[in-house]
Image 1 (cartoon, helix red, strand yellow):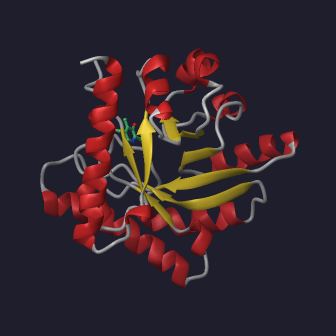
Image 2 (image 1 turned 180 degrees about the vertical axis):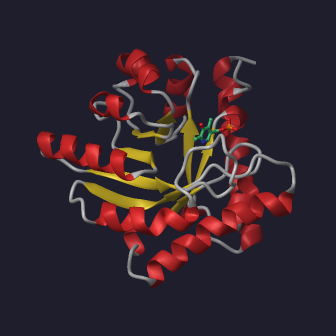
Length: 233
Ligand SMILES: *Cc1c(COP(=O)(O)O)cnc(C)c1O
């Protein structure tokens, strides 16, 4: 199979999985958006996926965006940042993306705001929450999430689109779903408290191995890499 055939066929499988999971959960298919996680994927393979109709990509490292951007900047797609963001990379990342899914602390939010004010623009963000309690993961602790959302709501340049999590890394369906469910419950509670609204209620959760479980628990965006582009080496 050519690269083209491989990627197109993998995308078809992913969309089938998403549709099937939606049917099973009694949700309309158009509630779920697919983000392609393109870390380590060369520009020509990203191009194939976008030409096949995909509209959203996400990178994890600012340095990699810098290296790849020229080769993909003509592509008609939305670009997000989904990795851990160091404050000294803010200026750079803002050149490439319209949304940062990994805002997980006040300092980052405030420094983003300062830079965006300077540039005279605003940006979409997700608040990344650690719902798995694994030490190695980034994301704000759930019990501190409301305070962070309140702070971000005061910053005119940051528009919250929803919440993001990297679920528990496990084969245990109940435990993984529990971590996704806790993000949904946090979102619902934030809405009840008036901290989030209809336009800021997305849930970015679910990856190659567990997107069905995330969709069952309410994901509105799944982030898929290896199931489309193959194992990362
Ligand atoms: C790599 C990555 C993904 C996709 O992971 P796969 O298992 O390859 O689908 C999703 N979200 C984030 C934040 C990632 O870094």
